[in-house]
Structure formats: structure tokens, C-alpha cells
Length: 199
Ligand SMILES: Cc1cc2nc3c(=O)[nH]c(=O)nc-3n(C[C@H](O)[C@H](O)[C@H](O)COP(=O)(O)O)c2cc1C
Image 1 (tube, rainbow, N blue to C red):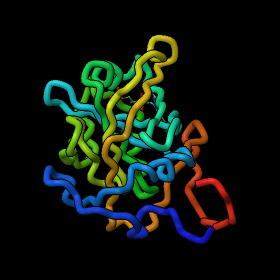
Image 2 (cartoon, protein in one colour):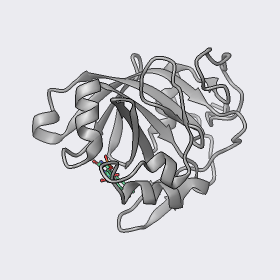
Image 3 (spheres, rainbow, N blue to C red):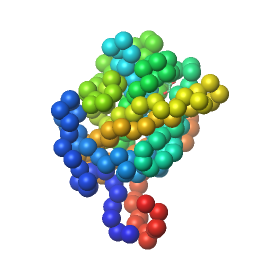
Image 4 (cartoon, helix red, strand yellow):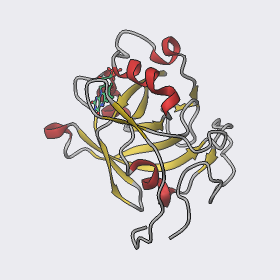
């Protein structure tokens, strides 16, 4: 196997939709797992009553290739929880290392008290299929719909289906950040290409 699977390599890209996301190009849904499998710290946006919000999330995992399903833990203590449960839509934005300090600030504040987009200088962009905004500064944005809430009561786990995926072609070879707890993050590094049978 020799192909690179990094976003930004201009592979399988389609023209962006009409509603916003003008900076973005569509990314194949069947390849969405490549963006999430290494477990990058992400931003999760919601919108309720016309009010956008964003939280930081590191507890997520791919569940299936197609449809692209993602399990994520959104604590019932988070302001985002009620919006996600009620509206059943969100966007997962994947930030590169350059956004790391903002990502931590997002995760250390609540939308109950402030408008995090405004106060932290993030740009909400209209999505195509969901009400929650894309994050303009993220190198990838996944529009998601909640498809299973059966584990919410017990674990705060939502199962999301990715219904649209976008990448920002201007961000070449973005390096993700990976949470190791208590302010420690590992930054994505060297790519090695091996002869693997796994997609
Ligand atoms: C690096 C990092 C990772 C986090 N991961 C999660 C997570 O996976 N699930 C979660 O519920 N909260 C997580 N948090 C905490 C939320 O981001 C935090 O409670 C956030 O401020 C909630 O915002 P809200 O009240 O506006 O919804 C994380 C915070 C940080 C800094």
C-alpha cells in the first residue's frame, strides 16, 4: 500500500455545496474514519434556538465505515448535552495543532456563560445538512445526525452518523493533537506507509 491517506492530498474531492462552507471541499464519507481513527481531539458544535455553541471532545471512536458512524461521550454536565439531545444534530470539527491553545480554552469554558465562538475568535460557517455550524479554522468538519441514543442514559454516549464531510484544502498536512490528560498533548508526527490489508 503506497497511497497517502492524509486530508489535504487532493484525493477524491468534490465541489463544496451551495450553503456556506465555501472554504471547504467535500471529503468522501467512506474515508471519514481516516480522519478520526487516530483519536484526535476535536471540537463538537451544536446550535439550539439560533445560538451556536462549541465544546472540546476527546472521547470518541469510529463504529462503522458506511454509513460512517461515530460514538462519542458528551457529558450530561455539558451545556452541549441538552442541545445535542434536543436538536439531534452536531458538527465535529477537527483542529490542527495551531489551534491547540484555543481548543483547550473551549474545553475549559461553558456556553452557558459565554458565546465561545465570539470570545475565542472561532468562525461559525453554515453547514449544508445540519443546523450546527462548521468551524472555519478546522481542517475538517463532519456534519452529523444523532442516530442512536440508547446509551445516553447510562454512559452519555451518542451514536452519530456523518452525513457530510468537508476538508479545508488550504491546510496542507495538518497535524492533529491527542489528549494525554492534564494539559498534556501529543502532536501527530511522521507518517509511515506499510503493506496493510486493512482499508
Ligand atoms: C482536551 C479536552 C478533552 C475533552 N473531552 C471531553 C469529552 O470527550 N467529553 C465531554 O463531555 N467533555 C470533554 N471535555 C470537557 C468539555 O469540553 C467541557 O466541559 C466543555 O467546556 C463543555 O462545554 P459546554 O458546557 O459549552 O457544552 C474535554 C475538555 C478538554 C480540555
